[in-house]
Image (cartoon, rainbow over all chains, first blue to last red; front, side):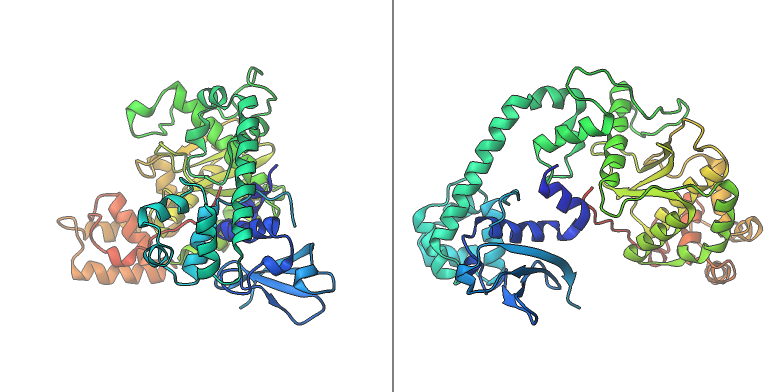
Length: 85
Length: 370
């Protein structure tokens, strides 16, 4: 089964937002290509190598990376999709 | 970085960037020297994303390089070509004409054509177009499930059958899906009595949560989904693979009607019309909550027949006089229900018209993807 269907079934309203961010991840060569401006608003979180990108006003995708500069990070592990508030 | 995701259209993504940065299409046109028409064609994926346009985006939307946008458009193009060649091998047209795919998935644009075919295969258990299969849901001949006569007939019965199969199948794919063990008729009756206050909510999301809560207590699978496109069907109740299933759709316009319909369907179950050892499907249609007897039982659950009769007798000229209005609120309090429920019953029984007491009823929204 394809990824987009699984996302749609499990995340409902948030599905398109999640797919937008995952599409960017798929095309980006490294983390540096994911914008720190809106809409992804990539930002570092407290905690070792944890980052977030926005999918809606309240919701974020949290992901983990290896050590290094965003320009050198080439793979990420999605940790969670959660509500900040 | 991640190779398995299906990319969203570049136009959709660029629009997201423009919105988030407060850049309008008109502004973009001015800044880039493109005409608004050209911009609109690119954003709707009707024109290819050019190098010059990508460079303009780089300038207007800091944080993304022109190379990124060009690569994105290229990868998307590759994906489209791959999907098109896959589809050629699948013979989508033949599947569509046999299983009404385009109609069935009209409201689920996120499900691609390949997936549509796979879903139908899984839902009805076939491997190829010519495999034999039998329709799983057998409709009772006495149940009128469509108001429009022209839409009745064999074709629609098969179509609705497919629609129900797909709805159940999609629901079973949810991560939180679990097998429901029905508690039995008697236990269901006592749960209904115990949880009557659940139906006092006037908020869509809360109502959906309450229905889910009740369904899990009663061991019933409740599926909330889009209605079958191009039909008037609102919902259905049926036994399926050892579970009792109730399908409710976004065709209900008010909270009170959803509550009435849900309880109506539960009454069919307590009445034994739908049970695990009986092949029978109850269909709710657009014409309202039909079947007077069960509707009567459902109504008596919310308000005692005597009190309702008193209230009904006060209706004059399709409306309630002030004294009736007072009584309406009084009865709602006594019976632990909402004035909206009573208004819905009165409207249904043609005691008052649909334009009166609009303030008591609440719109129902179902945001769903399946």
